[in-house]
Length: 116
Image 1: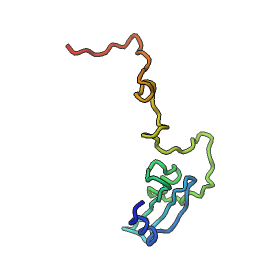
Image 2 (image 1 turned 135 degrees about the horizontal axis):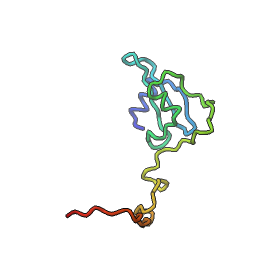
Image 3 (image 1 turned 180 degrees about the horizontal axis):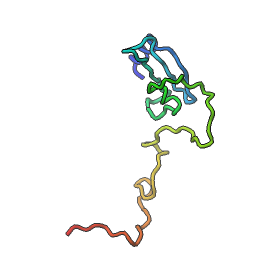
């Protein structure tokens, strides 16, 4: 986070809450064009996929109050995971260069296109 963001948050930010990943959420002290300004200070590298779903809606102007952390967890809900692209934990399908580069042969009904 830049010095400007820290200074703006110190002067104009009102703390709203923190998620379980340590990201801190703020709202502006005054309205800007009749809208409330909302923002997040990330814990670690600034990556938008680190924002859990319950906070995503609030950040994007949802009129509901900010999450409290006591929201019920439904059995069908998965645990939030940030985007892992570019890390060693990223998904790599069979045949990917970093997974050996060999994939299973295509089925017998596959014929590659050959130009005339």
